[in-house]
Length: 342
Image: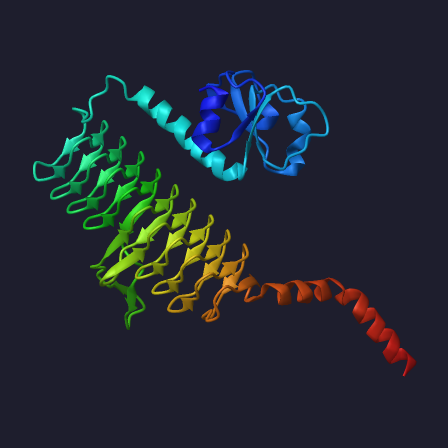
């Protein structure tokens, strides 16, 4: 793509050669001729003066302190423009890979009762069970498992090795990454008099609404009854555990290694950091932000609060308490000196 074509595509302006061409993206510290890089974080500005990339994407208000050899494309929001551009490069690469390939591999297993719409791609060694319905444009990668009566929406992507158990629903434009398990049994057992545990049948499903992304090796358990619900636009990182009957509200994002216990309701537009633990049967208000490694042991009722610590406190309260905590040895010495004076 030429610089001028990219600028038109992302709504930017060109400074330099409008006809220079690039064929791939590259990090600014690893730029090479024929690549496009980006500068969004001021910490990386020094790389811009040495970068060998042909084009660098920068903000409208960026003022270089030294000459830059690359052609610049100025945009209002570098990260937003980069996202659009990478999506474009990804589509071009996928189109190239798909040339002359059959949509349905002869090595895939597709049950005769499954219904596949137009332009569905199923690759080798994928398993499509009885009664499955897959909408147009969906892509099922090799070694993925789609259980009986599963529904997959249009243009959703199921990557290699993902497992979607019987009866679960995947909406439109969803992404399920490798190793993810959608619909495994919820962790439900009844203690017996002899000390053993009897399994409670898990008869519900998992539903992923439109635009949900599930990271690699993330597990979402099916409901005991009803559904475990991941609402529209939720983004889940790798290695997350979501237990049975949990609801995760629209446009919430959850980072790696977080764990949410059963029947908890997470609100809309929440941001949950890595390794956060949340107990079961509570509610988390809309817009809540939870710092990494925090533990939530009670309901969060006030919207748009920020929490930190285990058990979690209001974010600013935690910072003040932590500042005092680090001074405890010196404070103890002062108290002891004062006691000796008395």
